[in-house]
Length: 541
Image (tube, rainbow, N blue to C red; front, side):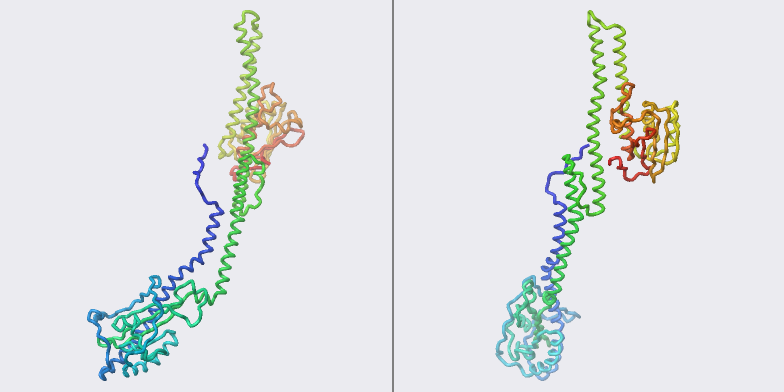
């Protein structure tokens, strides 16, 4: 049955797949850089959360200072509308950081401070003075900027902008109305940022947080804080030497893996595909060994592939030669039968010159003789086909068939020697067929005695079959296993006995060999082991 051909469509080659995988692995670190923007956003929210916590603590201290001065008449800011006041029954009122760099919550740089319309109340200036040491100590650790504003938005505590008004800034204006507000603004650094900063929007920004101070439902002031968020690229820039070394190591490792894969997988695979194509085109160069096998698996695959290809090539040559010989062998008896039949037919219709009875009997005898020859040839062909298609799972011992062999040749002396109890990978019937053909061939060449010598060779058994028949001439030694070759055609020989023996041995993974000249004609059968692994390929060499 012919296997269906795969549907014609584009399919990637093994090399393209390997290259794609290696390219993907190599670009993964670079692709990760684009996800740093998401990480930047998380750092911004983390910074906002820290500013909320710090400013809330200062707002609580600020509220206590204002509450202590209420009796002295300290002025408060606007009253918060009832709908905007927090629910007094809530035990916790968390403020969640919601700045989002990805949502473009980015304003222009913070506006400069303006001159205040009125100077700050002395009471708030005094509160700011009390808070200033706390602010400075906190700033040493957190690196955040702090501004304490009175209810009108005038700076009463901070490192800079003292006495200036920040009420016009959006987030401060919202806080002066009693609502927490934050903003993400463009930052102009004191020094030029390193070039790698251009990959991220998070470095050139500032987080601003405006926390209102509420006393008796009135705005008493604002804690205005700011800080630059942490950034991953600043760390990468500082460690740029290590980063470059890591990137170089990734590239070199990828190239090394690519070279290893190309040498151990891609290149042997392409060579094996090329050999298969050459063998399919009957190119002898297809049987050359591969230049590189790469891995042990490819070496085993190539070994079995070439063994199979060699067997198929020999089988193809065998079928061609066998067909030619068979045609030649069938032609002679068929021609003889046809000629005799035509003469007999002409004799029946002739009015004169009819064949005598003796001539008719001779022609009929020729027809019967040629028919018998064709019958024997057909029988040998059936045996040959059976030998090549026989099941190879049965086992036997040579000793099991000696009695049957002696019964088939009762007039022939058959002697045995050696370990005939060794189990081999042939059924009793198959082994008997092999020995029968060898014995028949020996008898046709004048043998009167046959000797079987068995010798263990590891897990295999070598069986020497010798006879005292006529020696084989040097000219015929190379042809005795050829189909239809016989020197006894006149006595009914078909020239297929030894061909059947060789076919049986080859199909079971064994071999047969004519041993060098000796006082006797000797054949050596290398019988297959009972538990065979890889078939013996020695007969192919």
